[in-house]
Length: 307
Ligand code: AGV
Ligand code: CA
Image (cartoon, rainbow, N blue to C red; front, side, top):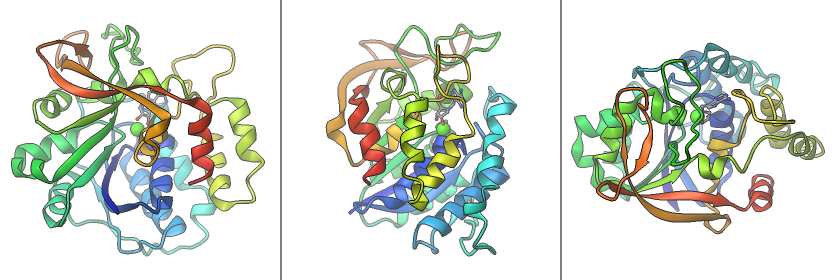
C-alpha cells in the first residue's frame, strides 16, 4: 500500500484527480490540501469534501485549506470552475457534510501528515508548489519522509501555456503562479517526477473522448467525470488559450500505471523573475528531474475507465 498526500488547486481535472485517487486500491490517501490558485478556495474545499463523502468510505479524511498566495493570479473564468463542480447534484444529494476540515492550513497539514506517517509518502501536487515550499522552509526535516514528488508542472518546450501580456510565453501555469516556490522545491533534494506539457499536450479533451464517457454514464463515477468535463472547452479545430487537457489526471494515473509513460532525466533550473518567470530550463549545472515526456494516449484513456 502506497501512502499519498494530494495537494490540488480546484480545477476540473484537479477534482477529478481526487475522485480517481480515491478509487485506487493500491493507494492510501493520507491527506488533501487545497490551494486557491486555479480556483476559488471555498467551492474547491467544499467540492473536495463532497467528493470524498460521495465516492469513498474515508469519512475520516480531512480537507486542509491553504492560506498561500501566488504572485501571478489565474484568469477568473478558470477559477470559477470549482463553483460548477461543487454545485453538481450528484455531490449534493447526501448532505449535510460528514467529511470535515483540517484545523491546520494546508502547508502545516502536510507537515503533520508526513511526521505522523510510519512510511515514506508520495506527494501528488497538481497545482502550484507553494504549500510544499512553505512546508520545507518551516520543517526541512520532512524531506526524509518524502518518497518522491509527482508534479504536474513545467515544460522544456519553447511554448508554455501562459499567455499574459507581461510574460514571454515560455512557462507552464503552475510553475508561473508562484515561481519562487517552484525554485524553492528545485533547491531541495526531493526526487521529482515532472508531468510536464510535453506529455499532457498529448491528452487533450476531445469530443470523441466525451462521447466515450457518455456511453458509460450508467456508472455513477463515469457520469460524474462526464459532468465535470462538460464544463470546459474541448480541442476541436485548433488549440486556444482555454483548450482543456487532462493535465492532472495524467499526473495522477502515473502513480499506478508507469508503463504507459516515457521518462528521462533532465537537468534544469527555474527562472524566478522577469519575463520568463516560471520557466523551467535545461541546464547541465541544474538539478535532475524525471521528465515524463510521452504517454500512450489510448492506454491512458482506457486506464481512467478501468481503475
Ligand atoms: O497548466 C495546467 C494546470 C493543471 O494543473 N492548470 C490546469 C490543470 O489543473 C492551469 C491551466 C492551464 N491552462 C488552463 C488551465 C485552461 N485552459 N483552463 C484551466 N486551467
Ligand atoms: Ca491543477
